[in-house]
Each structure stands twice: as C-alpha cells, then as structure tokens.
Image 1 (cartoon, rainbow, N blue to C red):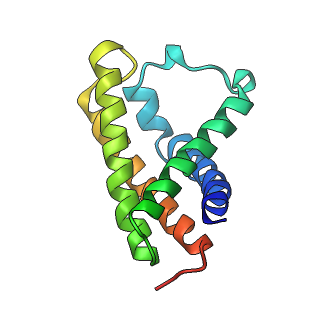
Image 2: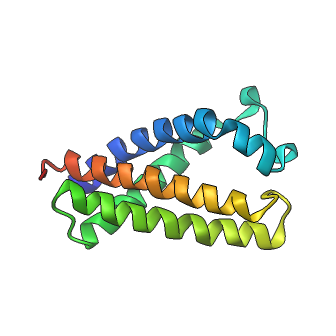
Amino acid sequence: MKILRGTVFGGIAFFFLGWLFWGILLMDFSANNYNQDVYLKNNEMVWWAIILSNLIYALLNTLFLKWGQAKKWIDGLKIGILFGGLYALTTDLGIYSVTNILLNVWAIIIDALAYAIITGILGTIIVLTWGKSD
C-alpha cells in the first residue's frame, strides 16, 4: 500500500511542483537557457504522457525511499534531494553532450538544483503519506 500511496500522491505533487518551478519560477531562465524550438505549444502537449511520466518518477522515488528505509520526513527530504540532484545531473549532462537543447552549463546547474529541491519536497510528501512523521 505504501508503494501505491507514494506513487499516486507523489505523482500529483510532482506535477504541481514541476508546474510551479519550471512553469512559473524558472520560466524566464528556461526561455534564455534552453532551446525553445524543441518545445510543443501548450495546446499540443501530450497529457497522458505527462501524467504517466509524473507517476513513474513518483514510483521510482517511492521505491528508493522504501529501499532506503525512510521512516521520517527528514529521511524523505535527504534521500529526495540526493536522488533528484543525481538524476538531473545524469540526464542533463547526457542531453547537453549530444543535443542543443540545453544552451549552457548554467542550464544544467539550475535544473539539477531545481530537481534536487523538488524531489526533496516530493520525498517528504511521499514519506508523510505513509503515516510516519518526525
């Protein structure tokens, strides 16, 4: 049941946190540091893929938290920060090495920091949905 709760609540949280961070807070930064030609317009986005992506990322986080034996909200925060930062560095460095989507190293750094913060919050939310808190 922890896996299901973590995946559902985590997926919802990841969607809204992503919208807040990348859609609002980092919108101007992204416009100046990411190749905008690769993005679909808002009315062309593939919503089922966005939802599935958020649920899979939440499932991955939930599994890591469970395997890492996270019991308190602070465990979720720490594991989430570490997981999110490393995940973003891995994908962003790979993308930067073979595409022109990320225009400079600052795009990698800021995205990794955003992922670390978002995933730290996500980890906290997931652990709290398990009924464990500090």
